[in-house]
Length: 350
Ligand code: MRU
Image 1 (cartoon, rainbow, N blue to C red):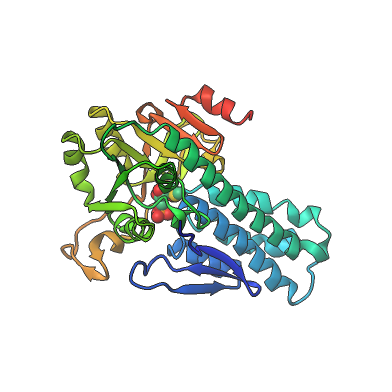
Image 2: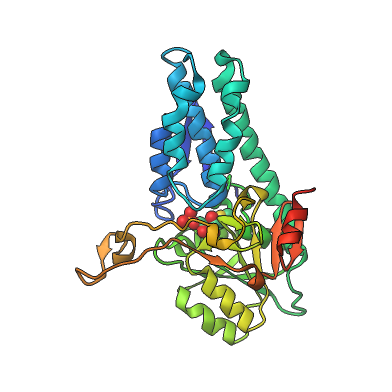
């Protein structure tokens, strides 16, 4: 199994794999301030909810080392406020971003001032290690409840990229379940949806799974319903950017259509996400902010304009799948069948 250097701490700075140019080039970019890191997150150098959370944590670390280089400030919270704000505002839907900043923030006051940068670094490293462990757990739990397909391989459809590239670099969430199934000895085939407009499925999921030697077939998003209607998909497995307290789950635009279709053809629909993706302050999906991204992502493909000049454009980057359409919600605590508000509440009691 490959691991990917999505977010690394190297020689005193943050290094991230530039996911915008994959699969054609493997380029790394170094970051030395929170402002730059926030730009990297907004421009999708790094993307995927847990990966954004890890990047933001290290963005806080580089900012602290940058500030400390010209002397320990009299107030860490005050000195760090602009950087924290830039990170917080970089992308609105993935709640892991806020979750990881909320883990870092109290350390600015609870740590002796001279030790703050190193303490923040320890915490960011812990977030990354926990992410790896959670992905491996989710992979095992999810794989156990995949449908049986006696005598033939299991065909799993996925959308966007919820793989190692979308997390701390190991296993992934939805792709972690696929890897968990492969590791458990199952014969698996993957149908990867292209994922317009940013093409995370075509560029990232296909690249990542092929590197692991997993049988992967690419389709455009509008082919999914046809394949489901033909009985060619056994299960749909996706990640999430924010799961509300009632189990509604936001994920890459297009996921909702797949969920509705899966329900129509009685295909199990699995959402895989760590607890850091659950927003207990969002009572249901209507409280999840949906990011609108630049219109050039829709009007252009690979830098070439395909849309008629002057046309109006919408580019919501996420949609919300209601809990009632979700067959399994898999976290590092286990696999929950048909999530409800009450089951989600119990999840946090241990
Ligand atoms: O816009 P992106 O590429 O950040 O969107 C990513 C997704 O929608 C993923 O499915 C989600 O973050 C889960 S990643 C484990």
